Length: 467
Image 1: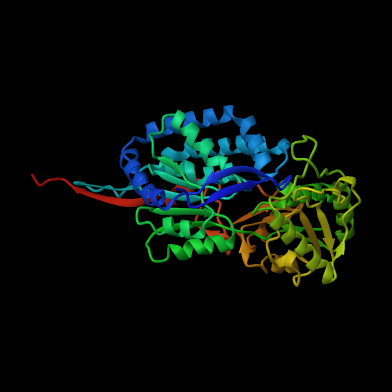
Image 2: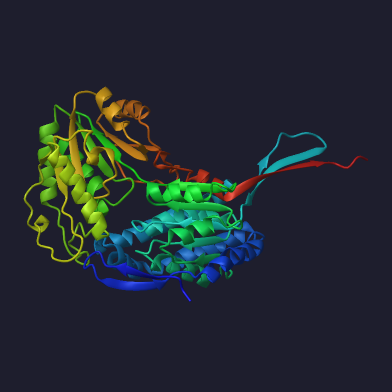
């Protein structure tokens, strides 16, 4: 008998749309053991055969793009015009990881010496627990799932209760592609006690968590009495700095997209904007003009740019940040837009907000808002901008916008973040390491470095037998 029933609430209507049974205590005890049994066989499967299965699974996944996109829109509220892109991008990301897997997992030869052979082999760690978030569930999942499987590990997937069908769909296509039973297992839970229990399981050899700082710290604490790898991708309060030499209209369009896409529900969305005082007013007007063209509304309408945020609790938290800023002297510069008006009696709709006159006493500039809010702060110099960008407990991404790319690059070296963009934002390239600094996390996904948390090194020293 299940310990809990998990209900997925529609962000659009705030009505129940799905239920899943949480894992029982008995099932929880069996899960890591089954993953260990599957690992013993899967680890001996040649890499070439693993690659064939992964490639076939990705091909099958592509045939389901429209259906999966609709599921995402219904479950987490992103407009249907954009959810399909997550599926296709996740597939492309996985294909890149597949392409580099031979190089990433190959042996490292030692120094040549007559009569000796020495090399380092990368061997799989064992069952991997992947706990992942709802906001970009397919993209987040492939970051860990693909290298873990290619390296020869079994995986246990724990999704957000908001998007329960994602790992189910993944497990199904991999099964159809020929993945042996038990190599991917899925369980549902909303219980911190249950998650703590499986994190503590001695059979779990690596843990990947994507979510809030509080959630990540709880996972790390639960694992603290074991020697086990814990990778954390946590929150962000990602800054953008707009220098005075930019094309203001172009910069405004890019910044707005980076701040409010997915209703700002991205760990790497732009959450605070610093603008050279010489172009501040012009930039604000350009942002206002851009926002006039955005449409908030029904996420199933292909003309909609922004749907609801994920939950009532999230809506309340975003609105509290906006109120805090206004109470402390910020100005609401949001333009008139018929679709932004407060006419939604159901759902968690939050209109984009443009705030000026902000400073670092306000929550929108210090905490993760995770919503469609664009706070703009005037700065006098590059030095002031960099100092303010670094005045944060987070360090996931940052962006600098300038015609002088050499200067922007020079400034980017001073920014305390795992990824710094120049003249773009919110684009995790699969060939570059994705990692957080400070409270934004630890560990690496993507690129060849993304394979490292799923292998351990084994050195071989072989000496010829004396003649």
